[in-house]
Length: 189
Length: 322
Image (cartoon, rainbow over all chains, first blue to last red; front, side, top):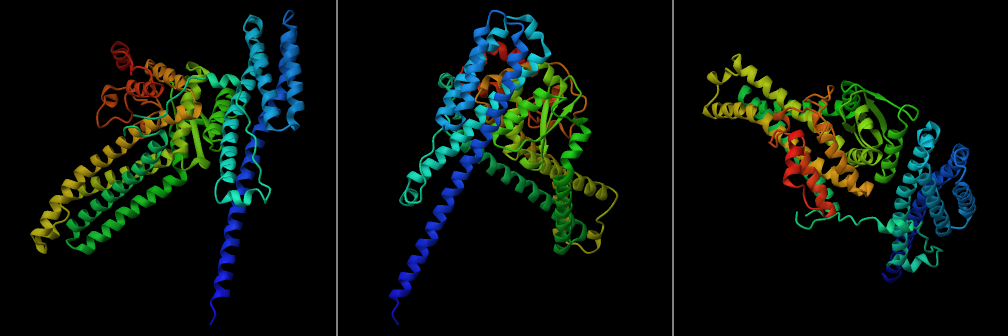
């Protein structure tokens, strides 16, 4: 009996099974990225919705600081528009918005009536938590992108990733200030 | 543990907890066997009571698995809150849940001015976090993040399940030992005079010794694990919040607080962020303490950031208040 055809068929079957496994693994990783990005988008959308309320609440008090308010409004419009331009662009626009919001809150500090205004305080808390949630969701998103990008660039996945249309994904970049955060050494001695 | 990373530390802790849980169950079985052999004078009797002891432990364990968290929350006088009642607490918990990558737990509030918090539940999908009103009043947002990050680390690392189930096992050992000692006291196990040899007499003595030692040993194991868990949760909290200073300030602030948490008791004290029972014996650095000293926890955090440990004078001041 000739074993050669059987061996060849067996090898082909094994290769096909391996290829299916690789393909499914990559699809799963890609889905995780989309899921993580959806989480960020929910927070970004919430922030965009909160800002007009904040602007309205402080408008009456801030006679002299109109520029701060227009900056925030413009940055918000730019961030909303950047929503369709991919993670890197979007991240840049959102970082701009974050920094204009920070200057707005810095100005609010100079107005005792505003600091005591319950409505402004609530909005400030909501924006703070949204911003924190964005930054934690971003860490999670970037981790999933790193995992996926590593997976498609390493052997043996790299052989199949290109032909099957798996391309590198963009990170949602951390804002520049984040680079200055003190370095925490997590190794325990 | 020289040079080990944070992640190695978590893995080592998981291994330890399995080992410790196994040890406590083995102790329960051993105690059951010794008691059975001593009473019935045969191997069969020993096996029977072993099965009974393990069965009792398993039953209690399952009961706790299903309803333990509700019980703990109820005895602590915690009420569930939503967005409108405690907006900032809900926000901070949501942030930390995202950061720790666990589902949003249920959030409870305890009406007490002593600042403290705990987490309970059987797994991250069925977890609850409770904070006192004092915690919300006395801590700022960053400090609250550190404390909630600590509690959600307990959730993520499955410490909440360990603490519920091992707590019950330790209780079962104490109950069984108690039962046997009373039984002996009232003249049980006399069958050894009729049928038993010297081997049974020896086992009888061993059983009495075990009945005295097993509850103590199992409690020591539980507390030793609990203290390690507190350090790990502190380190995990820093990993989650990326900010060691909030937690460090929260610890210092709570150490300096003189209020006593009325709803905490010996059964629940080990679950809290810091030991809520401020009696000297309960918080000295002995085998019987549920938490590490707060100054030791602060010093470990300072080690993470590369800061010098607390000066002796600061340490003395905080230790006096702790």
